[in-house]
Structure formats: structure tokens, C-alpha cells
Image 1 (cartoon, rainbow, N blue to C red):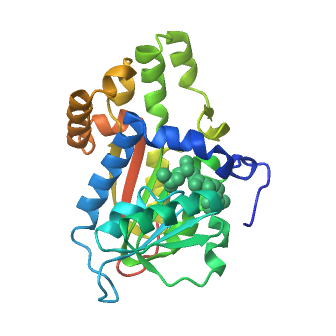
Image 2 (tube, rainbow, N blue to C red):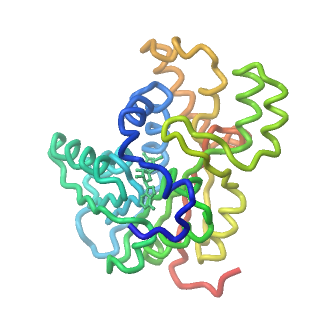
Length: 278
Ligand SMILES: C[S@@+](CC[C@H](N)C(=O)[O-])C[C@H]1O[C@@H](n2cnc3c(N)ncnc32)[C@H](O)[C@@H]1O
């Protein structure tokens, strides 16, 4: 793995070592809702897209795809999916889950900075979910997965949303002073990977995507209400969970909820012909 800026959170963090904490998060009701929403938005976004090579299914690259939780539903849907990640333990989990499901999944141990030198052909769809905020230079990082998208293909990005932090601290944690402080903080501490990360703004990222030649950018909200419900025990009740997931799927593409959701997702289409930028 190449490390451009060794002091950054992504380089300091041993993602593989936090595998148990990661699994506890991904199997929690709020973790499951996060994956359900992204599976839903991707199903919708990919529905009109044809494979550039005419092959069976789209060619998909999941950059920093971890243990494959976004990649696996796409592989099960018949797409040809590659997961790239720097943590071999997480990749091994992705490979094991694919084998258990009986679906092909290509796993590639590499860093995002290695992308330009790996010699991969362009992909119909590239995902880069929850990596940018670990990086010192999210705009530089963003250009790497963006360059792997073929003209007319799609890029999906996600990151935590700063706008939700004040709401969560005030409404869920009953901490109005902390909520006020959240308005101007530039970093946050992530519990799962025990890392300090930076806030990455969705509107700025959308603007950067336009400069990189992406001509349609759609914003979604992941977990618009789940984190405001303080009673976590209720979320484990199957009927409550089912209602909550249905609500999240209904709100994920609606204003104003997308703007204050716990996390943002941008799905952008690369212009079919290279634009002059701007
Ligand atoms: C928060 S997890 C997200 C995993 C997955 N994208 C998801 O949303 O389920 C961050 C992932 O980024 C990976 N990662 C961190 N730095 C990386 C780098 N420089 N290159 C590739 N992967 C990296 C970690 O190993 C980890 O799997």
C-alpha cells in the first residue's frame, strides 16, 4: 500500500485489527439499515446502465470495499465485481462470504493510491464508500476512483454528514452545548475504527465531481431518522426494525431529509464524452 501522507487517519488506522468492532457495527440494526439503503439506491441507479463490453452484468469496482457488504448484493445480482482494499483480513471475509453465497467476487489487496498503476480497465460502476473522511486530502483521493469510471459510467461515494451531528447531539444525547460545538468542528472521533476523521462536505464533493467531468450528481441520505431515535433496544425488535427500514428507504431520496441524514451518498455519472471541465 502506498501512503502519500503517512500521518493521516487512514494510514494510522489498522482497519483489519478492528474487525470485531466493525462486525458488531455492520450487524447492528443501524448498520443493517445503512447497507439496506445503499443496496436500494444502487439498485435504482444501476437499473438503466448497460455493460460497455456487452458482457453479462456490469463491471463494478468497490474501492476500499472492506468485507464486501456493498459488493456482495451486486455480485449476487449477476454483476462482475472486484473489491479492492488495503486490509487483507477484511478482504478474506469478503471472499469467504462470496464463496458461501456461491457467487464470483474478485478480491484485490491494494491501496487506493495504487489505482493508477494497477493497469485495471475502466469500470461501468465504481464505489468508494466511507474512505474519503479517513484521508488528509479527500479531493485528491476522490480523483482516483473517479478516474476508474468509464465514460457514461457511475461513481458512488459516501461519507458521514456533518449536518446530522448537531441534531444527534441535541436530540439523542441531550447535549445542546455539544450540538453547538458540532457546528464548527472539523474532525470527529469514529468509535468503530478508533480514528479521528475529517468532515467531508457533500456539496463541495459534488462540485469537485463536476470538475472531474461528471455531469449528473444525485444526492441520497443514509439514515435520515434512525440516529435520532434514542431507544436503541426498540431497533432490535423485528417489527420496529422493519418499519424503520421501510421509512428510511422512503426518505433516502427526499428533500429536506437527505440534507440532514447521518451520512450522504452521491451517485454521479461520468459524461459520455470528456467535457472541458468547470
Ligand atoms: C469504514 S471502512 C468502509 C468499508 C466499506 N467501503 C463499507 O462501506 O462497508 C473503510 C475501509 O477503507 C479501507 N482503507 C483504508 N485506507 C485505505 C487505502 N489507503 N486504500 C484502500 N483501502 C483503504 C479499510 O481497510 C476499510 O476496509
